[in-house]
Length: 113
Length: 113
Image 1 (tube, rainbow over the protein chains, first blue to last red):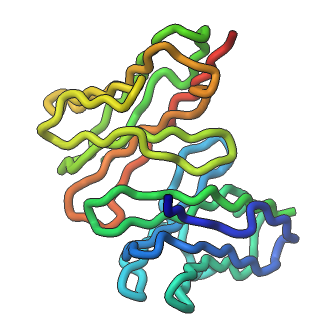
Image 2: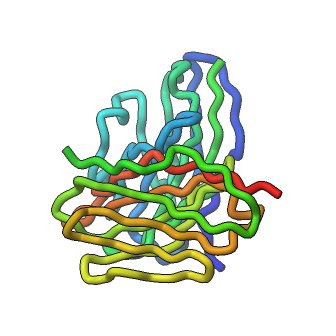
């Protein structure tokens, strides 16, 4: 069964360092998303991406964040200068069309020290 | 304000027992409501989707109900198993597509022997 895959599963970094989280969405999906979940809190929307551009972003998604789809399969989230409060589980998700089911990856746990 | 509230926040039941989780929402205009199961440290997995015209939908031992008039949904789990221990998240989508998903905070269910 097709699935969304994410790497790394866990990354530990020092505050101020750049981090890139990678995602491979399901191959025939067109809409891509990043969410984050701080430990013990609910899932929060970061950004949606369609047709090679950001379609919507939340207040959390400030200038430190960027997304990219460098080729036909990968979808990346970059945090330029990590802060302690960026520590969270980051989920990539994709869906085939606007009304379709949203499939989540297993998440990348980011720990900022 | 578009919100999704879930109750109880956490629940402990014995294996084999039934339980019902509640979701109240103020999201408007309503498109659909999904229940997700999220195992610890994993990505959410969709259990059911309810559209405006649907009142009840089952998926194995999971039965979801929706009352679009009162903006309430429930997830009933029958004959619980240890593997049902997880967080159950109610997610409501507004019409208009894109990202317009609102996540609940989840109900943490623990099934014990």
